[in-house]
Image 1 (cartoon, each protein chain N blue to C red):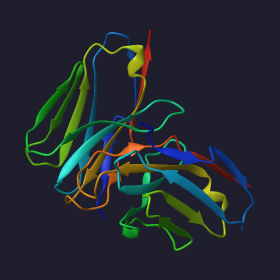
Image 2 (image 1 turned 180 degrees about the vertical axis):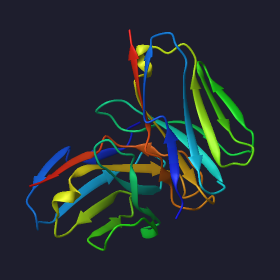
Image 3 (image 1 turned 90 degrees about the horizontal axis):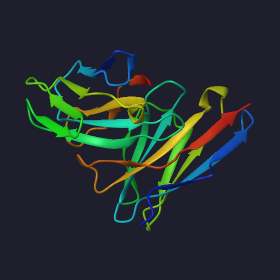
Length: 111
Length: 113
């Protein structure tokens, strides 16, 4: 079956440092979504990527979809304590396929 | 404009019992998906309801069943509870079943003893 991996599993950074998490799929994807879940909270939608090689930015966050549509990355520039949480990618093989969430990358920011 | 609401917030049940969780989608949304999230893991897709029918299903046994009502709200039922069913159950709503962003509710924390 389809496998979704995220690396790293955990990341501890000093406030102000950059952070990157990667999402890798064993199969070609239709689209990928990124969610953030704060400790004790629920997943909150961040972005959706659909096109090969697509790059989207939200303030300090940069999202990229790989050319082969099998991987994606989320980069945060100059992390802040408000960035703390677990970042999940959620993928679909086809537009109407069920959603599969990755295991997540947990980010800790040391002030 | 209310977001996704779920009830109850917390629930404690005994092995073998049955439980019903409820979800009201965000205004304007017609599709509801249910997820199980164990501690330290990503959400696992249980099933999705649209137009009062189950449209997709994840790898969950038949003990997990659901329903969607004409007002788009939904219920998740779990029979013959096992200790391993202890988890956060998340409801997510979206518009249609395609590639639309999902809005998650706060979840129901189920503990099976």
